[in-house]
View (cartoon, rainbow, N blue to C red):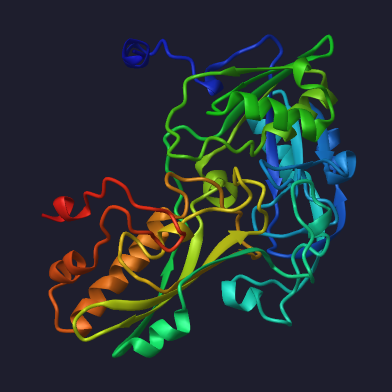
Length: 405
């Protein structure tokens, strides 16, 4: 449908969109994983010829954004929580001048204890990254301050009895790393404000959610915003997050000019919204004949410093933790954890690849421990129509065996 436009170069992407008087916006990122902002001096940046606007978190204090849980300041206020967090922004006549202005901004930090590891973040003496978590729009108050901001438990059958019935209990721990979506086109936004109406040109895949989220963050009515959805140069799940969009709005408002912001690939990897890293612990009881009697999963998600990039505030995957296998007694625990690292966002099948990798690796190891062929072991234990998984969902039209065959 759009092949001719793309192959002939007629397709307009967000970075191509030009408006009279348009200027460039750029962002200064934190160099510290967790620190108090003592001072930001923008005097020299503001004095640079060609600079039209300079803003910091103090200029827009209290404006939070996010998709479901709104826990992210547009620009860091008082504290930075990961290397790469956005702390100041400038708009200038051209990109080079904007970069020179960023280089002139002086930031003084006071380092705070940081935590990067999932298990360390859950210890009693770990620094709490969001002490005010329960006050964020979209959040639910916690019983006590914790970096584990969301936990679910799915129980089915009698886990202890299932393990008691087993001849062997086999345990493994798996980790997965962050993964950037690696789309060719980076996040890009153009914002123009004229006569009280805001126009946005962007490569967002969710224009209506983008409009409503921007309206909430900047405090204007959604019907005063028009989002023009242009061609998207690759998504893979990653183009639903606003990233620099609220900053672009404030730069346009401050400068009185249309503003274009185009992330480079350093910024994408430093402060994008990658697939989450995970820690997955599996413990399975099995009889010598190959029957699995119990299965316990602890699924920990490294959410990074903020939860706001995720459409639901959390990612799934836990519902896949027992796979398509017949196991009568299961417990699946899923914990979403804040750390002082880049926030995770959305990538295709969020949570699924991490869980399936761990589970199927675990199944292979169980089969080998029993001296069984992994294929035969799977065929013995695959669920049939009408049986249930660990989440209590009933399987229908199961074709797992046919797929393996």
